[in-house]
Picture: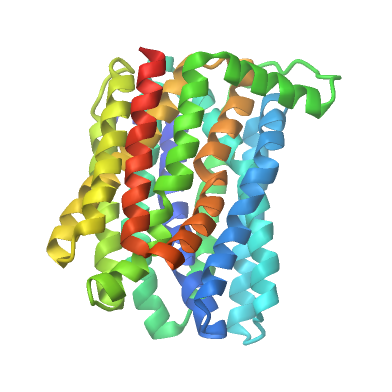
Length: 394
């Protein structure tokens, strides 16, 4: 299950990410609390989320070209340093009592740009720090495990610290946590592959990557399915407060319990993927788990009991995590190394870049038809999409 950890470079990366992602999820929880405390506006919560995600849609394709043309190792050091600076500036503004809403807007966009350039380089970097290609699937699964473990631990720590000391301490911890991942990157000994000098314009490189991705039927299908599930299926996240308060008649603790159930299901999914050897059978798993995710959303839309909703969310979290990570593994196993950054940037656009649009659509539809019907429709569309993709690739 942990065989990728036998490589020193990946082991350093894994440890650094474990610390840094915990800080990231602490900041994620604290930023929402801070925005609501300053504005008392639910709309602002969604707007800040949109500002943080939209740079992924705009900049990530170009970042993928750079990830194929530049030293990914150095690129990651720069982006991680940018993210650290953002967190430390926010911590300083909050702790000195000078924080204003426009500061959060500007720094959220700055962070979104840094993440847009970080994501394709980080995903393509895996192949540089794992000695054998057959262990890359395990490394990707372990990354998902770390991400979801941090999603369980980080907000819990943040809730305690915010209650005791205020939001600033969470941003400070997050800023300092980047020291671990930067130190890990600096401690690696990377055999840098020769990068062929490119005189062609960056737009030409982008077109080349798009042509390669959409010219491959398997990659094209994965990108389309990932985009659909991210835009339509992930809308349940933004509507979760409605279910906690209005559907299940609960409070903030109910919301935390529901989100924790999703995180636990995702963590179980990460362990499941990490325990597998190789990529054989992953296409079938993608089809199965996409349907588990879609059917789970439909079942969740009908539940009016907390314990039942929590159990259903375990399956939703499991299905969501496994199908997204499995898609990542499949793409990484078939893409050409010289186009890895560009193809992974397109995957990140499908995975993360479509989410803000889905949030806006879900909010509008839920306003008109209600949250349960919106989530039911999302589940139906995700299941239908998986059947369509499977039939086209049969």
